[in-house]
Each structure stands twice: as C-alpha cells, then as structure tokens.
Length: 315
Image 1 (cartoon, rainbow, N blue to C red):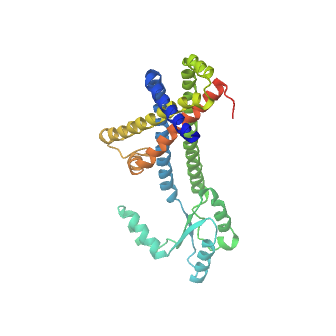
Image 2 (tube, helix red, strand yellow):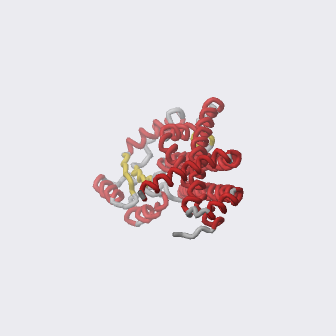
Image 3 (spheres, rainbow, N blue to C red):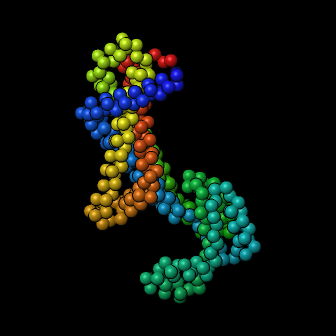
C-alpha cells in the first residue's frame, strides 16, 4: 500500500508541476527564453571549442623537428641515431630522407619556381640527408632538443636543427597560442553553465515568491517537503527540456543560414565546414547532452532555490 501511495504521490507531483508550467506560462516563457540563450551559447561554445581543437591539431600535426646530417655520416651511424631518437619518450615517429629523397622533395615543392630548380640542378645536390621527428607533445620539445644538443649528436649535424633560433621561437609561440585557445574554450563553457544556474535560480525564486500563499496553505495542511518542492523541480525540468530543444533548432537554423549566406569555408581559425559537419554528425549526441544539461541546470537550480528560499530542512 505504501508503494502504491508513493507512486500516486509521484504522479501528482508531476501533474502539479505540468499544471503550474501551463498556469504560469508568462513566467515559463521568460525563464525558457533565458535558458534558450544560455544553452545556445553553451552549445555554440562546445562546437567552436571542438572546431578550434581540430584546427589546432591540424596546425600542430605539421610541426616537426628536422635533423640535418653531414654527408660523411655513414649508414651505420645514421641507423644508430634513428634508433636512439625513436627510443625517446616524446617521439611519435621518425622518418629518414636520403640526399636523393630530399632533393626530389625539394623539386616537388618548388616545381613552379624554375630558377630554384635550375640552381639546384647546377650543383652536386647540396641538400643534406634529413631525419624528420614528429613529437607527441609540443609542450615537451625540450626533451628532444636536449638529446639533439649532445656533443656526440651535434658533430653528426651539418646545420642546427629546425628547432633552434627563430624557428624555435615560432614553434613555441604556436604551442603557447594553442594551449591558450584550449583553456579559453574550456573556461567559456564553465562560465556560461554557471551563469545559467544563477539565472534559473533567480527565476525559481520569483516563482516561489508568487506562490508563497499557496505554499503556506500546503504547509498548514501537512504537505511534506518533497510534495511542496517536487512541482517546482518538475516545472524547472520542463523549462530545461524545452529550452534545450529550442536551442538545438536555433543552432541548426544558424548552420542552414550560414550554408546559404557564407561562401567561405573558414573564418580565421574557425573552420565553418568542420563545425557544420561536427554538428550534424554528432547531432544525436549533442541533442542528448543538451537536453541532459537543460534538465540538470533546471533541477539543480530549483533544488538550490527551494532549499534556500523556503528553508526546508534536510531529511
């Protein structure tokens, strides 16, 4: 019997929350409008953050360290050096290009510049054999540089590695910039989520204040804490679910409009095509996450507001 009573009470709480949502439609629209804006900003932040990460990965994937070898370094010494570099913890891959391969690559890269091609062809291949190192973590390039700066390694080199001088400064600046972009994207999502909770918290407080007489009567009639608090939580969850669906539709409309209005495939670091493909390819996951976030924000905000404003005791 007790179980049946709990089920009846549960459905009554849901029914009351839904009725309150309809009865206070003007407040509901205002609350949802705020949540729609916040959830839309959060969703855009997630998409932009993912797009920035994709762009950053594209940039960093092109960064490598080149070691230029003397012409007198024999095959055994070269193989030993390649093996030593591969054994370094921050090395993802190592490629060795012979003098002939470097020359062929140079000719392909400068195929449109006949003067450079003629200049190289008139000499006896001045380009050195090269070892190309792809790092795992750009923040730990010094571990590779320290190895390459050993006297026994330096004597095998015909010139300083590509991770030195101005090239080193450029790579370090790119590494720093990518780290800052990742941090900004993460912080932006957190800030907007917190702002959303605060806004909904204030909205629920207003709803409680408007119904203070009704709540007082319910208390006098012996209504329990959960029965009074429940409808507010249900109402807030409805706010969150509907706001999440509307925000998804807004973002979808924005991408549809951008496809027609914008011919460019990117705006600076923002790859529009990738952002659009990311949204459509992960639509169900984003929809689920957005609805879940809306429910969580609504429920948490309502719990905090009812506990603080009504001064319910924790049982």
